Length: 294
Image (cartoon, rainbow, N blue to C red; front, side, top):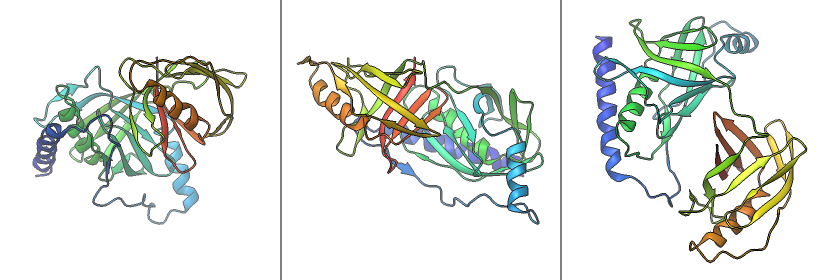
C-alpha cells in the first residue's frame, strides 16, 4: 500500500511539473516562492534535551556537505541516473533545515534524524518552469523521494536515502563547496536596484574575483571595477567601488545594468556559497547578485 501511495505521489508531481512548464516566467520577473502547506519546525526526539538533539544532528555526517544527486527512483519505480547538466542538491543545516536545488527550482524543508531514521517534511520551493527535456520530471521525482525518506546510510562520500519499504530512492555524492577567494565568478542574476532581480542583458558579462589580500575586482559589464572587502563568518562588507570611465552604447541598457550592480554591491551584508553558486545579499535578505564559478 505504501509503495502504491509513493508512486502515485510521484506521478502526480510529474503531471504538475509538466503543467507548470507551459507558463514559464520571463527572466525579467522576480522569482516567486510557493510555501509548503505545512512547514513544521524540526521536532525534538522524545525525552532528549536540546543539547542531545544538537549532538545527534551534528554527528550524523549530513551537515557541512553539499550532496549532489547521482540517481533517483522515478515515477515508474525505476532507478535512473540524474541529468548530467542539471544538478539536484541537498544541504542539511544544524537548524533542522534542508535546502538545495531540485533541478530547476530552489527548495527548502525541515528534517529530523533519529539514529539511522530520517524524516523530511513537505518542501516549499520557488516556482520557475524549466523547459529543457526531463528537468521538471526529475525535479518532481526528486522532491517526492525526499518527502518519502525513512532511513539513510552515509559513508562520508555517498549518501543513500531509502523509503519506508527499504527501497533506495535517492543516491548522492559529496562535493566540496567552491572557495570564495581565488575563484573566477560570473554573474547569472543581478538586482536592478528597483526591487527586482533578473538575468543579465544578452551579450554582457559581470565578473568578480576575491583575492586573499582583501581586494575585489572584475568587470561590471562595460567598465572594470575595483574595491576591497572584509569577512566575518558569513557576513561581508564591500566598500564603494571605483571604476574605469568608458561609455558602452550597446547593447541597450548595459550602462544602467552596470550602474545598478556597482551601486548595490556596497550594500552586501551576507554571502553564501552553495556548490558553485555564490550569492550576495543585503542585510534585509534581498538578493544583490548571484554568481557561478567558472
